[in-house]
Length: 150
Image 1 (cartoon, rainbow, N blue to C red):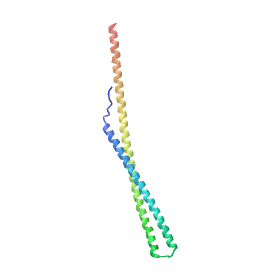
Image 2: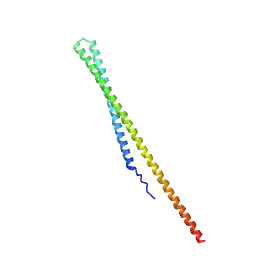
Image 3: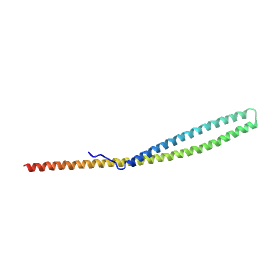
Image 4: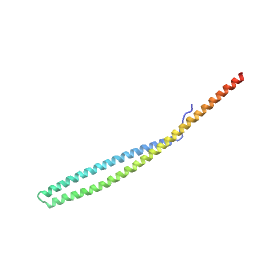
């Protein structure tokens, strides 16, 4: 029996490798988003602690230098939070880009797998047709031999 050889197998293999790379990129981008979210959460916790310290200092004996320093710390932390929000937004955009690239890579792989399936079905049909021809020839040959013997 003939062996099926898909002539575009190399392209399918490349598409599968590209999909694997896209999966890896997506995974890294997702991990980056999680990391940036954790950083932002820590910054919010630090800001809450600084605000609590500021409140405590404002309730106790007033030291203007300490009070101003605490207020400046809170404002600085707010700036860090704003910066971190921008970093998080960039990480999320990169995640969306990676998701899109992964979807495209998956679509291309599926297209090539479908082409391979179609080629295999054609191959099976060709083999089936060849077998039918051989059977027809055998039946014809057998019929002609019987006719000659009679």
